[in-house]
Image 1 (tube, rainbow, N blue to C red):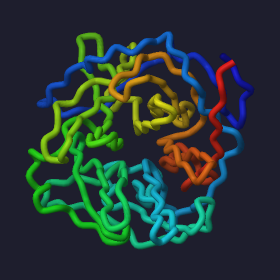
Image 2: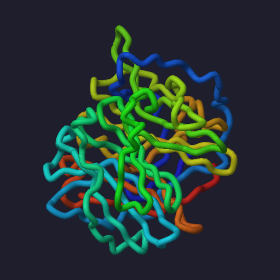
Image 3: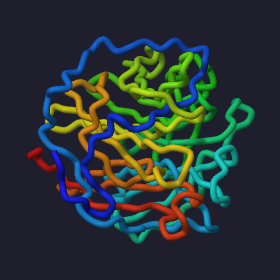
Image 4: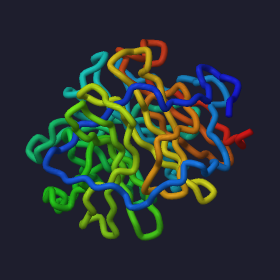
Length: 329
């Protein structure tokens, strides 16, 4: 299938491109999901960027907004965004708090609020990366990366004040896996997706893995849900997994970048009838980095962010574009 490009957006085959991976904790065992996806299954719809990206939030002090999460509080009828930030153009190990902003409308204007989740060195945190917020008024949860392969948790009643639960200082209750966590709640199960890698004599293979829990205390060992077909550089060129459940199927959005700027804004999308395994058969790609998919009533949007080093000043901050679900031809 092919579609007309819209602002650097096109549907293309990706199977022959270079590959990548995350940086895991070498002490964690990873297994493959038992589900075998049927690559011949056609997705009922394909997500397409249906307009230009608009910069809706420009962070203060020339800060960037990299991997982020967007959530709506129905009790206050207000949107919130939290994300990786720093005043440099790109300093991953200096990212020690999350930028926070809020707005009455997803498209703004956005108000810069006080930063949240300042790094806790005493708890063994090295930085704070890739927040993902789930929950409901009075019971919000933020999962985030606090070291290269450490997912931890903070809680809030109002999305402004956050605390780390005392029992989460015990690392045995942390989800196992890699970086850039994304949480999907399915029935009584929590699925935490993250970026991982597999080392082999010929190089490293990028992976997306999932860890599961029914009580947020006991987590399964990470299982591979997607692996690239080739090798990559050490840092890895898979980032920011995001899974959307729609009409009985699952869409996995993944940033697939490399060491240069030219491929920094590349999001690839996979489809499966199971949330626990995807095959390397992308159904589309489009221009975006650390993309989140947001639903606002009957309208869908996709976001983009990133380091100023690669976005440039023009695209520094939070970008949004309309997203449409189109039937394959």
